Amino acid sequence: MPSYTVTVATGSQWFAGTDDYVYLSLEGTAGCSERHLLDKPFYNDFERGAVDSYDVTVEEDLGEIQLIKIEKRKYWYQDDWYLKYVTVKTPLGDYLEFPCYRWITDEKEIVLRDGRAKLPRDDKTQILKQHRRKELENRQKTYRWKEWHPGFPLSIDAHSHSELPRDIQFDNEKGIDFVLNYSKAMENLYINRFMHMFQSSWSDFADFEKIFVRISNTISEYVMQHWKEDFMFGYQFLNGCNPVLIRRCTEIPKKLPVTMDMVECSLERNLTLEEEVKLGQKPGPENPIFLPSDATYDWLLAKIWVRSSDFHIHQTVTHLLRTHLVSEVFSIAMFRQLPAVHPLFKLLVPHMRFTIAINTKAREQLICECGLFDKANATGGGGHVQMVQKAMKDLTYSSLCFPDEIKAKGMDSKEDIPYYYYRDDGIKVWEAIKSFAEDVIHIYYETDEVVCEDVELQAFVKDIYMYGMRGVKAAGFPKMIKTREKLAEYLTVIIFTTSAQHAAVNFGQYDWCSWIPNAPPTMRCPPPTQKGTVTIEQIVESLPDRGRSCWHLGAVWALSQFQDNELFLGMYPDEHFVEKPVKEAMAKFRKNLDEIVSTITERNKSKKLPYYYLSPDRIPNSVAV
Image 1 (cartoon, rainbow, N blue to C red):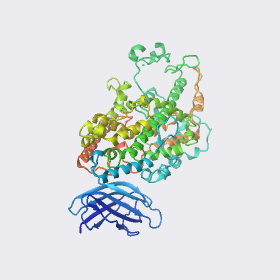
Image 2: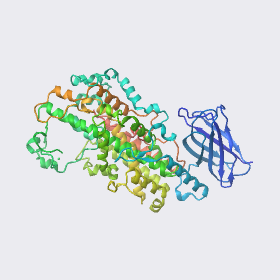
Image 3: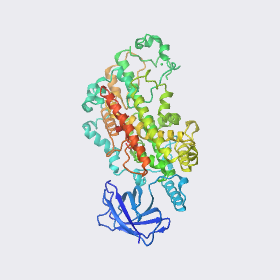
Image 4: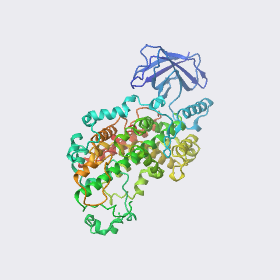
């Protein structure tokens, strides 16, 4: 009688193993096997990180194996099991790989296909067509769209992390509990003793050092030493944690009543203001234009107000909306419209790891009404919601295309605008991702016509446009993809946004925002309405009190930390793809990324302010913090 050798790999996550009954059956073109018991409780199989092998004997040859079915039956109590993959050695000596990388919960049966990626047109048998259709039907029932706030991109229909499908939850929910993480951060930073001092002002700038942790050779200490300097003020718009706002000014804004006399001392090239421009407020006596030539404290307070405003735009628009919420849209649409056998699911799923989970936890604890966001930030209490709603009109597809957005802002010339490392490194990473996407696309899509005919791809694109982005035509998100070239760009937008763009605007938060006067999360006094009145005491009184400063410091520390066992760009330990050409494309991708790392490392050796946020070895695959 024919015998098949079945190998089962259990994940290494905590509680990944199981003591339940586990059954397996095989389904081939010539018939189905009976259900075989692979393991009984307490036989020490299916332990965390284990790889177990079994011989499965059948009455007759099953033909080409199409599907395998894994069933778990409870022995005593609920015991989830994380199954990595199953391999089958046929009687003819062929090896088939069946990727899973999912949790098996309750008493459920899961059905797996072999790991070869297939487009819808590639499925010829009714068995495979039906399996594909049923998987998507179940996913669409599980991953439902929901409006969290009017005007926001749609998000997942779940009120809490515990309501999410087990496959997309964090392995350890405590690891992403914002209350615990912020409290732990404040404990690590030794600032708990200040927490009860809400409404208590600091005495002077030096007083802020009481909660500032000195870590040798870090950007944060450099910021503390130089934050008052105009150089540091300007540099942050190029390479700080919000390097996306700066744009070349081609004409003086009509609402900005700046004259040549006002700024003559700042024009170093003996050009007129109009010549320099080739550079919203209502003019009036209560809206003075503050200048570097003004009194020291007037100019310093004006810069502090700009830094505080930049902080709020960074947190709510650059970070929350344009990375977290957008990435969740991509993730939900992927689960709803791309089955596990689809090559684009296999390509994108590593870049969606934990994104829905971290966003759900944020809505649960961080940005909700009376959440942690309100404890420190002036835009808490609903202001952040209004900012996101307003910013939605500028959330366009082209603005997510990194090179296009850089060019649209007039910031693409290295000669005219040197030292813009966010641009320089971002372009390199964008091109590496795009090259990888093109390589994968050309493996599975021989022509543009194949792209057009891929109904699952088109449904994925339509879901993002119609539901995630609310069907706003002016936003320019495609309703369908017609060419391989456009598909490569689209996939690059997704992967770049979920990995590189998030890294660029997230992991520098402690570096640039831990010195409170450089990034005040709230200003307690209104801006001055006339010049010559600002004192050092007024500035300190305007800055956050001791309690809010501590919450802020704990937040930027926690948000700047990588996840445990972080997976960085190009790392794909879960082998969703089994084909050699794709693995070769991955190796080429990693080589390109390694070259970028080397270039950035070499450049940074001579820099007092190194820029490393877009170094691929510091770019996590997904939005997970």
